[in-house]
Length: 126
Image 1 (tube, rainbow, N blue to C red):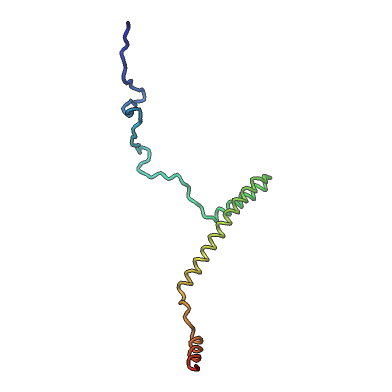
Image 2 (cartoon, rainbow, N blue to C red):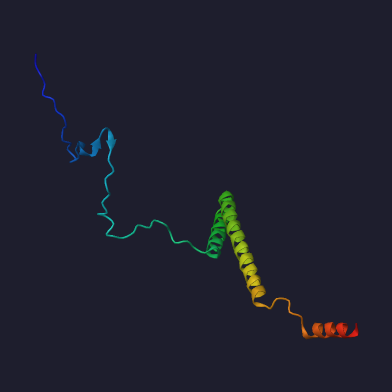
């Protein structure tokens, strides 16, 4: 009968071959950074302060309410409320830190001159 020639590995048209396969598992290949121009990719936006975001969402809520979209306006007001809470919490922590710093810098319960005079009189009387 007619025997076929066995092809072990057929070349692929995209230039890849089977050399990256070993025992059915893919080997890890290092990625090239040809598109990065040796710059670190940073896809994160710059974060705005809570005060700016509060103002932004209040303006958006006002615009949504004036255009008649009550639901969107309420959504923006909830966002604004969230940032208001963040601001209040931040201010509370800042004030608490100031109090702690002031307490650390003041002398620790040293008696005043009046207190020391009273104590001396008590000692001399007895």
